[in-house]
Amino acid sequence: MSSYSVGSLKYISREQLADYVRAKKPGVSVIDVRDSDYIGGHIMGCQNVPVQTHDFKMPELARTLADQEAVIFHCSLSQQRGPKSALNYLRERERMGMTKDGGDEKQKVYVLEGGFSKWQEAYGEDKELTEAYVKDLWE
Image 1 (cartoon, rainbow, N blue to C red):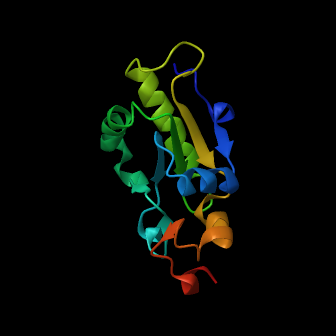
Image 2: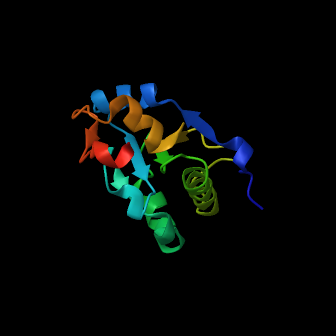
């Protein structure tokens, strides 16, 4: 049984993530798990890995992101898909022996507070932080 649960998830604020994106901080990956609602904008430099692909993509994701300092998951609101994806990712890393007992000191895994919905309220029109933004879809 996994040592990770919903209660062990950590959250990151949109302000802190914006600082990372602006600085082009190496070692930080943003994973957008939205599917059809990915249209209308996304965080600059994110990877879109739709939640319905996670059953077969999660092992690959864990391997390709193994050297990252932080991995941040989000969906539209970060209430279901984002947290579930972060939890599945943590459990996959654990299953693959990439974590230590009681947690992972090498890599931090976060969920973006408020998801893309809250992100776009603050940064939707900021071309340095948000790509392909369509304001009309968010009003």
